[in-house]
Image 1 (cartoon, rainbow over the protein chains, first blue to last red):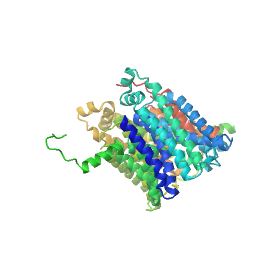
Image 2: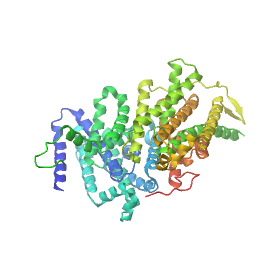
Image 3: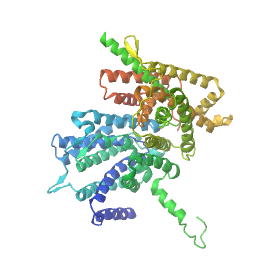
Image 4: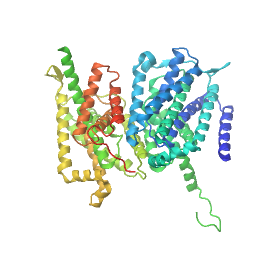
Length: 321
Length: 294
C-alpha cells in the first residue's frame, strides 16, 4: 500500500513542478488536453478495463457534460461551478437510468448499443440548433474562476485541470484496490460466478457506468470552460474510438496506463501535424497491432520489451526462473 | 389523395433502402453465424464496393458494367486479406479483442480510402438511365428496380447455397458447433475465410447498387454498416427471411420517420429502433430467446 502512495505522490509532484520547466504555453496547452483526456480515459477504463463492459459511446457523455455546462453558463448565466456540478449530476443520473436496460446486453450487442447511443447524442447535438447552436457550435462559454483568479491562461488551466485529473486518479486507484474493484474484476472474469459469490452485478455495472459517465461529464464541462467554444464535431464516433484506443494502448485496468495512453494519443497528433489526415489510419493500425501483440497495453508491454532487450543476468546458484 | 401519394413514395423509397440494409445485414449474419464474430468492418466493404467502382470508372475509364464486374472481386479479395491479417492471427479471441480489432480494421480501411481517393463525395451513373417511372402515384427510378432485383437474386442465391450445396451446409455446421464440425472433417478455418469472402462480396454489391442513388464517399460505411447491423439484429442474425424483413422494416420506418417527423433526425430513428430492439427483444423478432452457457 505504501508503495502505491509514494508512486502517486511522485507522479503528482512531477506534474506540479513541470510547468516551471516548460518553455512557453504550447506545451502546457497540450498537457491541459492530456489531463482532460486522462479523465475520460480513466472513466472508460473503469468500465472497460475493470468491469469488462464495452462502451463505444463515451463521447456522448463527454459532449452532454460540455453542452449542459455550456448552455447553463452561456445562455442562462448560471455560475460555472454550479453548472459543472449540475452537468455531472444530470449526466450521471441519465447514465444510471439508461444503464439498466443497456447493461443487460453483453459483448457485441453492448458495443452496438453504446455506439447507437453515441450517435443519437451526436445527431441531437447537431440538430437541436436552438439549444446547442448546431454544427456551428456554441461559443461565449465563460471561464471558471475561483475568487480573484479567472482560469483563462494555459498555466492556470493546467493547474485547474490537473487538480481534477489527480483527484480522479486518486479516486479510481482507490476504487481499484477496494472491495468494489475486486467485485468489478470478478464481474469481468465471470459475471455468473460473481453473482454466485454475492456480488450484485446488475447494480454494480450500472453504478460504474454511471460513475464513468459522470467523470466524462466533468471532463466535458472542464473542456467547455477551458475552450470557451464547443462544437458537435469533437463529440462524435471518431472521438469515442480515440478514447478506446487510448485505453487499449495504455493498458486495460491500469490507471497509469490510461494516463500513458491519453498522453500518447494527445501528443501524437501534435507531433504528426504534417500528417494530419493520416491520424485515423494510425489509430486503426495501433488498435489492431496492440490487440494482436500487446493485449496488456503499454503498461504490460513496455516492461516486457525492456526485459527481452536487456535480460537480467542469472545469478550463480539460482535456478532459471 | 396527396397524402396517400406521399405515403406510397415513402414506402417505396423505404423499401429500396431497406433492401440495401437487408443485404448488408446478411453480411453480418453470415460472418456471425459461421464465426461468432460481429464484423464492424462490414460497412467499409459496402463503401469499398461503391468507391472502387467509381475509381475504376473515373480514373481508369472503364465502362460501367465492366467496372461493376471488376469491383466485386477486388473488394472480395480485400475481405479475404482482412480475415487473414486481422482475424486469423488473433491469439485471444475474446469479444472485446474482436470488437477492437474489427473496429481498428474498419478505421484502417476508411483511412486508406481517404488517403488514396480523397474525401470528396462521388456520384456514379445509374445502371439504366435516370428516367423516373410512375407507380401508384409515386415516382420510382430504374435504379430502385435494380436494387429490388439484385437483392432478390442474392437472397435466393443465398438460400440455395446454404440449403443445397455441401459448402453451405458445412458453413451452417460451423455455426452450430465448431468443434463438432471440425470433427466431421470440415476445415473450419477455411469456412471462416469463406464467410468473410461471401460477406464482402455481398457488401460490395450492396454498395454498388446504392451508389447511383445516394452518392458515395469514404465515410458512408459507418452509417450503412450500423443500419445493416440493426437489420440483422431485428432478424435475429438469420441468414434468411428474418434479416430481409428486418431490413425492410427498418427502411420503411426510417423513411416514414424522415418524411412525417423530421429529416434531420432520420438517422437517429434507426438507432432508436436498434436500441429498442436490443433492450426489449435482443434475439430479434423471429428467434426464441437463447440461453447462455456458463
